[in-house]
Length: 402
Ligand code: ADP
Ligand code: MG
Image (cartoon, rainbow, N blue to C red; front, side):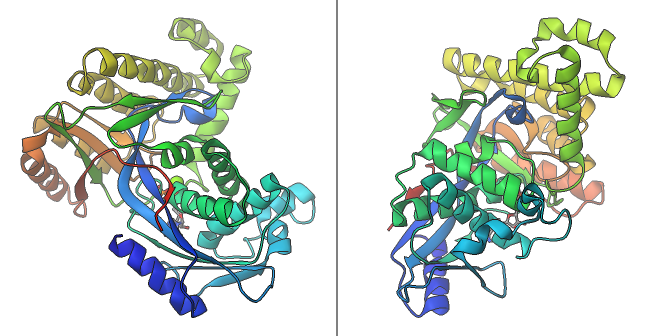
């Protein structure tokens, strides 16, 4: 058990005066390649990272049907009746036609675990017993490493067990996504939740976001003498506002113009026709998604045929596409990528939804210090706040730990 497990257990005891019935955890993730392709029914290739969110959870012994949730992130726990969960969140109220505006009735962070409880109760047919949840995490928040999927995955795994819902990992990933989309109001795809649920040591998850068919692809990063460096710019992003939703809308527009259900159905060979049919901005959004889908397929093939050492150029091309066509990079991410490449990285790209967050670099295992120094120096020279640099190894997905 880690420090995070101890912290979650202590918080649970502070909240309830008892010890938890169990500890469940789920990891953050890095997306190796395939950005903004998930909600276009396309392909992604993420892996789970060692950083985890732990939920210490217990069934309430007072027989009262309430759910109480505490996090080390928040000063106050939040408590609601299980049968009121469906009325708490603005998007849900909107769907029910009772209100079209306003903030959620709970703090935003609590909408993640409470949204999971609501979505899981719906999927299972009914909520189970009242429950207490205490959450601790070492996943960097808002860094594009999916602390959101980690909190969803830990909560969903715990409730699935304690409510005997019997749902499989893919169903739990869908529940996390539903919570994020409908309770939090962030229009994200299914990638993060699938990566956090299905991760395995030393493997990436090749996910078809249309069928939700997932295959583990061995990465062999350490075997090849390589390491993956995460470069968290510390520029915070927020998916429930702004650019993310606009990009989704552009993709939907592009698919409609092409007369297909989603951009998954557009191939690289269709792009010259697409260019004649749509405005420049929509076309560049479409070109990113279409070429990125192809890059995921190419990366999987190259990994299988040649190994991790050979995927660098695909990572670099992916970053250029996000920077120039999809326009979701920021100067800090470009600086991190360029500095890492100049210092000898085999490949580098921003990862996650963009507008801040983190980039990754595929580097020689013995070059961690050299590349880190170069990135730090480039940030200092540009007047940016110091980045947070650390290596990650592909790790296990959501599980019960105790
Ligand atoms: P990312 O998933 O890239 O870290 P998001 O904006 O998708 O960024 O999700 C971050 C949000 O998730 C936080 O602002 C917070 O509301 C919630 N969250 C994540 N981890 C925790 C945690 N351990 N405790 C409480 N809330 C959390
Ligand atoms: Mg997230």
